[in-house]
Length: 362
Image (tube, rainbow, N blue to C red; front, side, top):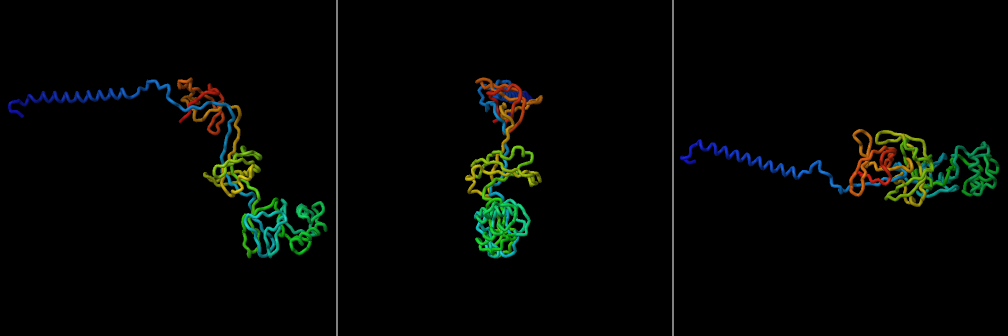
């Protein structure tokens, strides 16, 4: 500091410097604000008419509700077969073997247990003192098919039946008694396929010696009772096999609902059984998970719009955004809605028309 300059002379100079500095800051801030305002688009600025949007054309057609359920493809009618005869198991068939009427299922005490066709299970021995019954008719029908009974089968056990039984026993190497003890034959509606042996040679005979199935494949799927209406007997369905291969099937039975464990606890579900229209496509598959697609029509000749096009309105109701002309401009069109299904909704009223292009969410 110069000793010639009075101290009081410094004060105005400092004030001017401080004032100029503050003014400089304000000017820079103002310029920055102007730049920001110039760069930020105005909310009142019109949108570019050529902005690309996703649109879908409104069409007329059938609205179909589709349900996807998981099921299991495998051999039909799995069950166990054994005998009421006492003794030791001395022979079991290999897995995969198909047993027809008149053929051996397994052996007990080195004698065969034979399969015969019939819906009624064996419940008594066949002998000359027995009463008439449908089981006698089943037996005589089988003996006739095998060539041992030469008369028209009926429900009466007569000496003709005894004679046929003796011929049948002789063909099997059994003692020719003319009577069949309970447990010597097993009635089944169809031929059976051996799934696996339940008993080993040397085990005591029991009610479960072999595990069998039918010879055809079927798909079993469980559906909620609320969806039973879309799964009537005889309905054609789509079946998706492992690997994404699609084929068709036909519902053959819908059984009474049963209680099953679900994600929200126990629920009532109906077992639905279907067969493949082309059994060859599932010939190499067993006990695999498949998807079953069940469809139900909600109506035909309906004006259909994608659900993603709907816009909820502040005062209630819905509208869609429709493009107008080639400019890309849009307008809101109120709509009245009907049934929903598979991502579509039936439009029952409003200003929407077939051929309109509506904006959908990206």
